[in-house]
Image: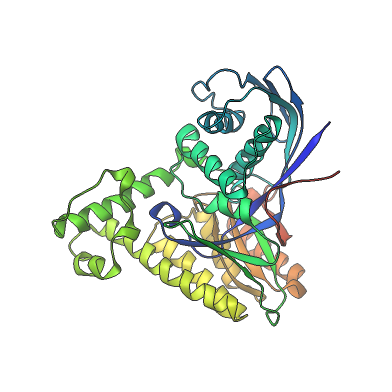
Length: 379
């Protein structure tokens, strides 16, 4: 019997770059993502074909995962690695995987990992709740792939619900799915691909995480408090009032990282209120402010992404938006008025390509909707 899993991509309108510091984040699962079709193999063999990347992948679940092979098959090996820490795997899968949008900015890696975790669990009669799938996939990405991320991506993909905003507290793991206010104006999610792709493990992503943690060390040192190992150190553990006492004394780079965290925490709190009351314009303004802080305090954003962001701000019909994902290459996302979809497409495309004509063939605009989280599909 062939099984089919759909694992959606995600967008995060508020809560940028704070999940790894145990902050507050928001997000949607969207109606584009990764499809995995597979059969179960009784001998433990795994053979995978991708419709998006070259080469096939094969290994067995009967032995421990080896070091990364530095190809797209590492995500399947990572899912096996994280599951093997908890369960004995006896059966493998034979399948085909396909992504429905260009890679970059929508957490396709997390979507793929969640699909593989669900597939290996199904093959081995392991019952997992969505929250468990999320945790296992996140562990695979940190410990096997080598990206020091938080839970934002996996949470949106595993827990998402159509027409609901997910709000996750990355310190307590408590979350809410907040329904769209009945009087909120109609909106769609615009995805603007820069034409650049990126590999987060080789970007400054992990460096920014370390800078946030170093900011905590600086503050705690001035407070003459005991320091914890970096992997146990989070900005969430330091009150904003303590940061304010020392922000002018710690190196400016680290102060900017902390400023982004604390201001983003406030924006998420305000954004949840805006969403609950149906104030989409307020929610959108906060998303624009989030991107400004990402540029100036967190210091991410390639020239291409900044150009898209500036084009979005100058385009009527866009409520708000920001870099999607890590913000080094990839895409920008926006909350848009559906009645102005084509005008938005034309405006952002014209403004962006005026600065970067070399991306004429690879720049792309898509409009998507919120959707439910990762699930088995009855074909």
